[in-house]
Every structure is written in structure tokens, then in C-alpha cells.
Image (cartoon, rainbow, N blue to C red; front, side, top):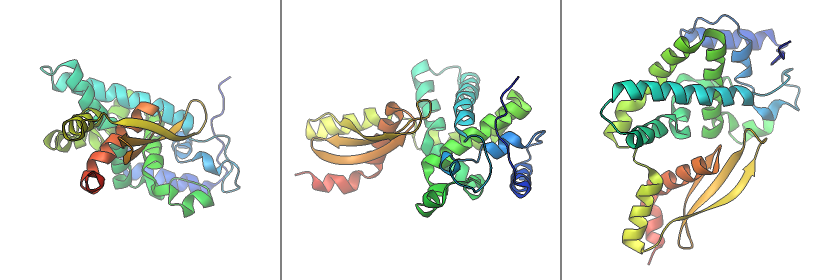
Length: 248
């Protein structure tokens, strides 16, 4: 017998999510997993809505689906590009920052359920939470409608950002670029330190600081130490004009 993933007692919530899914022209068959996609783990101990679990398992699935679809699209679109360059471009496509931007654009933040304390801290618009919700939502599409519809959704909302990524060279590995700048200007190699980690074993969240010497130059959050380091390096590059002033 398959496990019942979620039990939604609020008809109003189902109707709200159903309306949202329909507005994205997704011909859903079963609304249950779409509702689950918007359940952040912070609400599990509150009486906001009756649920059996959060969106973490759907996020896990959606992350894998997104990577496969992005890989397939890039593989066929750029037969001349080597594996290393394709990997960098794919990383830029599926990076949390890009997914959060896409998620905010389509309005995911207006539907995600977080605890009242998380909400006061801006949790429903937190880029990390929005990016995770996007992956969970994609996982729901895949379970409900299959690979073809999931691919169509990714093409419309994620792959469509590729032109800007290529134009601005956002696919250049931020850690490598930061290292290049740091070694050329300061004769130092950037280091990374884990500030904190939270979440369950299969859904960790890491906060990492990037340093050049003893100077903190960027901070990043990710579902793995590697992703958090990438985000920290990217943040450092974006804030370069600020921290350069601290160097003598």
C-alpha cells in the first residue's frame, strides 16, 4: 500500500492552489501534491492546516527532475559544447538564486505556508524557501502529469532564462572567478567556513561564509556545502565594490 503523502482539511486552500495551478495552464488531475508543495516544514507544529508532512520529499524529487530536464535540453541544444561548459551552464540554470527569481515571478510566495514566526521574518519570500518550493512544485507536476508536462513547465519558466545567463556569462563558475581575482590582486586563495546547518538529513540547509584572508566577503545558503559555497562566492562577486574598500 502506498503511503498517503498529505491530508488537506482546508477546502479553501485546495481551491486557492487549484486556481493558481490553472492560472499557469497546468491541466492537473489531482491537486493533493500541488498543495503539499506549498507546505513548509515550519507549519507542521502549528494548527494552520492539517498536514502529515512538509514539501521536503517533493523538493528532493523535483531537484532531480529539474536536473535531468535541463541536462537533456542543453545536450540537444549545444552539441558542440564540451561537458564542462554544459555543466557550468546547467548549474547557473538550476541555481537557487535563479529558481527563486523564477518562483517570485510566477507568484509562488503568495501561496507557500510558513509558520507565523517564519512569516514575520519574511519566510515566504526568502529566496531559499521560494527556490525549494519551486522544486517541490515541479515534483508535483511530474507525479501528477509525467515527464512531458514537467519538461514543458521547465522550458517555459527556467530554460527561458538561458539567454540572459549566456549574455551576462552568469554560468562562469563563481568560485573559480573569485579565486582568480583574489590570487591576482591579493595573492590569497579564498576560504569557506560553514556558519550553520539545519534541517533533516535528506534536506539540509547550510550557511557558509567566504573569506579572503580574514575578511568576510560573501555569504551563501544552499542544500549542500558545495552549493552554499557557490552562492557565497557569487554573493562576494556581487558585493565586490563594498569589500574591496576594506583591503589595504
